[in-house]
Length: 451
Image (cartoon, rainbow, N blue to C red; front, side, top):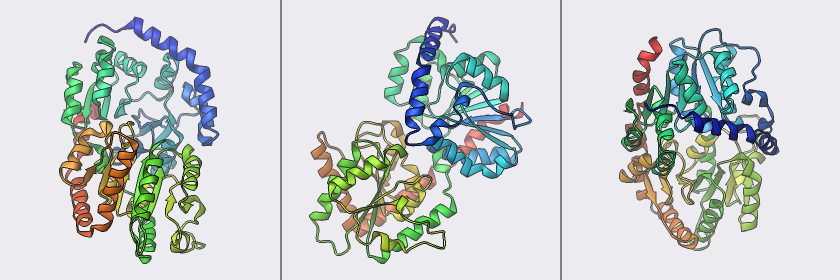
């Protein structure tokens, strides 16, 4: 490995220190929509309360909800084998997801959750001295230079797992020259999702790269969440309706989907019109999206306005949904329920150039997926899903073209029962045949876990 780029790192540190007031302001600003951003702020700067784990933990960094769910099978295996786990996050929603998944291990003192501090040298030092992790596992793209270089200096094994590097990100890393290469060469190993990802890491000079697949294929939905989704599905089917989920939508995409939906509802003589479930990617946009649906003229209801079907006060969902065109999924931790209730999915993040979202959970729940033109953050999974018939891609240079293409694809799956059933089978098969990444990762980690 080439010499450590001290000059560039000094500049990086200086910029981080200058940004501290803006970082704090941003946390407080975001707390207007999610109060979790106002909580545990000291942890983000390396100040923690009493340490709960008595022995050196396996440290796993899962930035938000998707990464937290993807680590579930791995963490359960590590806990079963007696390893204490330190689980870090960057978002309140990620922390909430971890608390829901591992509440029992947290109560037993076998797992501790904290926020990962910002990439400041003194905050990193406080974190590493407090928890003394024996091994670090960073998920997907979380290659923070300060943490990576300090772990390398200390000789602490540090792996990038479920690693992905899009062509766009690869070119960005290359623009930093030798410094970008040294960053990834400083990892003990990189366990990549696909051959495409592995080749890009190898082009940066990384020697210890292994292709293990995508851990998200190993995600098992919680039984109670699936039961909730099936409860909704039964209510929808009683009305003779089909349901389409617009999942993890981003700003600008909702209008495209709503325009396509209006076209579908007005150009067909539906006996029982289909139901659209729209689930925005970010909770702080729930109210904004509610306003957009209202302005579209479509009848809608918010999930938050419904009582919980698991309570004794639940009203039959068919009474909520009988006269609506859209259900706004403004709830957390229920994505699997929306998938279970749906017949197929329009994947957000892919209609506009934000790189796409994870389509794997949708396929695992038997939902074929309609993708937009932009899936560069999930390139391999998207290509494989399209190749086997589990996904369809729609394109359009202008929003009007994309709206028309999307409406046509949705309508085809709504009216063609045989095609929809065939693609449902393809989706289930696609998800099943790609499982096993967690075991392959554990196999690669064995030497480090035994030390």
